[in-house]
Length: 233
Image (cartoon, rainbow, N blue to C red; front, side):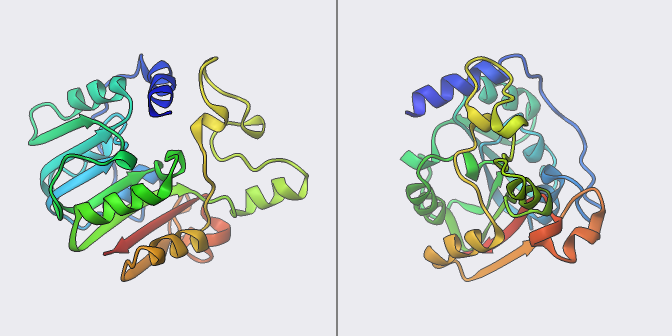
């Protein structure tokens, strides 16, 4: 299964280029990548699961001593390595579900920027992230909010509230791309709170982010198109 998924993602991302874009982290986040860079607290070591082009890790270079990335797609590994060239960084090919070759309590922070919805089996992935975090370490993640106002209205119209591809998930980029761009799970803030409680995380905080800044924070479950979450082990 993971081999097939990796091949599908390789096909989509084959032509992508390194990304050293500087994200705004001096204001309330307006995008998912900004949110991860903004809320990541800093420390010695960070692991970005599904690090993509490496842009989030690149923007964490002043917050952490060592930057580590994990990617299912070999194409994305190469791109992220180019983005992080010259930094104290390591990007590995691997799958968080099947385990990663790092010792227990290796990381102060684990980042998942629009990744958890792509993970096939959440349970072993959560167990592995808990193992890799030091006591008091944090998971910082974003994922589309399936309960946002726009998606609730789609359901009222009898349409599937897809969270990536348009046309109810059918507007994919290549013939090999997965439905809804590979989104396999759909989350609300409530679901994420229950997920982290299941693995005994001691603190859970949800934030609303987006182009309107702190306005999304008024009622995140309705006004934020993505769930921005920080959970403490």
